[in-house]
Length: 283
Image (cartoon, rainbow, N blue to C red):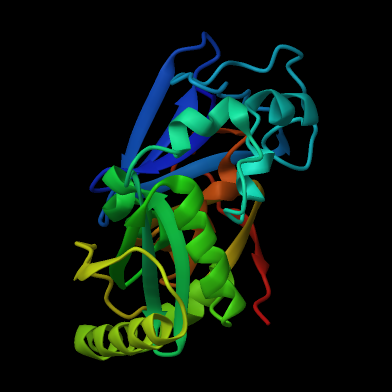
């Protein structure tokens, strides 16, 4: 049966949410050791939108298809997320979502380490910090500040202005996962980064503490797959955030970026069918 992938999440494991043709919500949990045999469509469809204050994803009213992303412009506007994505904490640009954001100490600032020399800064709602860092695929994470959403965004913008990145690409994550390093090495680098930030800026710092994250052993050389029109068999080796690492029938390690499945129809692949996929070359 085909289903439309509508989102990803993390709750101790990577969760892939989809919608059946009848509109029923389907959740698949992906863990190491699982079989991974799927066929994904070339075409992407709009998954709909979640309105301000709403908990459920609403289907696209126009049922838009054949788009380059997982959301059409109209549904993107209906969700009213863009001002929040651009927020640097100077003032609230999105009154429609202010009540979700500006509450006392409901957000946290974190540092995520992927490999020596590869650290990013990020923010998340306080109750989702562990899950957010797990979704990022971080090997170590340090929670360093707590405030309301607007002020935490201001702190994040200041950290970025001091030279720390706020994004890590799937390719960089794969490269990082091939580096063999100890948890203590990453923790020491996180502590040194925090000490530098505390000397150079003001924020609502807290006593820092480490996030509880899955253990990711180093990976051998792993290639990123182009997801469009993907047919593949394999066994899950690991889930590094939203990357699913599989070992195919030839023993090669490959990676599927789960975010690129959102908006595509997927179905279980008959194991008698041959694999069909293309590689994305890594720079």
